[in-house]
Amino acid sequence: MPRSKEGFTLIELIVVMMLIGLMTAITVPRFRYALLTDNLKTATRKLAGIVKGLREDAIREHKTLILHFDLDANRFWIDSAGMTEEEQILAREKASSLPKGVRILAVWSKGKDKQVGGETAIRFNKHGYVQQSVIHLGAEDGREFTLELSPFLRRVRVVE
Image (cartoon, rainbow, N blue to C red; front, side, top):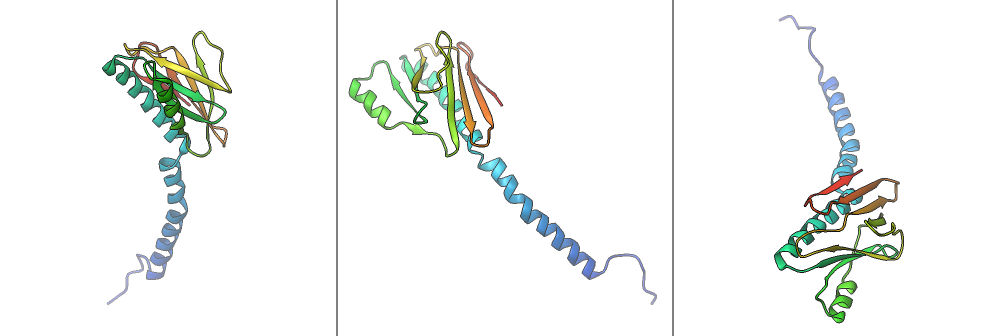
């Protein structure tokens, strides 16, 4: 039987498969890191979720809730206007930290100066209204995200 000159040899197929495997082995970890472990995006989503939850909790519990930030220690915590001093101290001790490499750069609220250090707070009243505020988050690599809180709208606008 005459052999056809068309097609690929086994060696050619093996070489192509090895190249595809090598490229996959190099690129998949980078995509995985960018999509799944980006601390700045994770922190931004977490903080946006906390803000939305605070609005809902303030309405449901019919009380003023306060989101505190310690910009120097890179921590935040929640308390309410009706808490005792001991409960407020306990809430502060249980403050949450942002993931490694992510910092709260600044917090601005309408009627106040932009805070880049020290402590500041954003109040959510019992009707779910919040001061017009902006929270700036940054990563070590220079990327930044901004969360914009609107007084009456329940969504949090995230700007890269």
